[in-house]
Length: 295
Image (cartoon, rainbow, N blue to C red; front, side, top):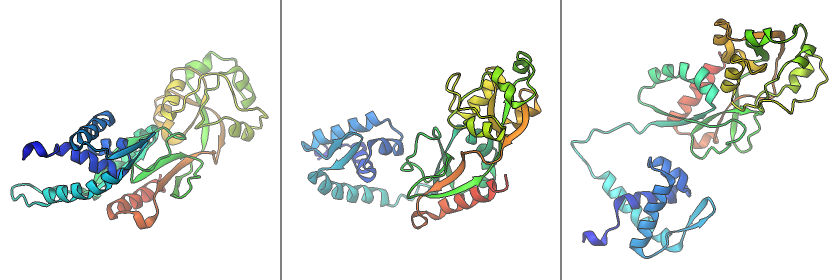
């Protein structure tokens, strides 16, 4: 009989890929690489002598045979998983997957996460990183913190907080420049560029009729931008929560009192419609809103 049965790991890969309609998401769920998952699917198809998926670019759909076979596989896997094991300790199934931008994760999320875990020790948190303004898929997460304009169709979007942006530089870099007394003196400086913190709105507040810089070092990570400022690569825009420690240590200093009170980008909490939210995810959403509205 053993020779007639397909490998269980191939069946698990097939069920996960069919449920998500994605090899990449199924691979992440099973903690394997997408290529390893594809190998398992091919192994199953070779065993069955039938195709179970039609591959169209990054998406996959079940064949007619695959749909029929999926019903059988799910019954078999459910039978195995539901069989009582008296000596096995039941583990908590409460889990929240949250995706956050790197700088927010380092300076604002990790320092506060311990409080949530203290309040809800039975809920497991899985943290993923993504690049702001680029990765906009919510398919792999329950909740996301997005840094952007807040325009995300078909998703519930809640602004976490508003924080002014201002210019900073390292003391050593300022000493290398002619006297910087007014914003107009920035014509002598290297301005660090970022799609996350554009200069043009700040220029308007400073009374400068200047266009957005188009040359010079560009960095689309706010934490890395601060590191570039600290190491004397130029002057950049930042926010208080991110720069405060460096300011306290004297590694960077504010260049002017001028600040942009409502920058074009802010942090937003994003998730699916309320009807689709699991209870543990709702607890996490409520905690995030309460925590960062006080930030």
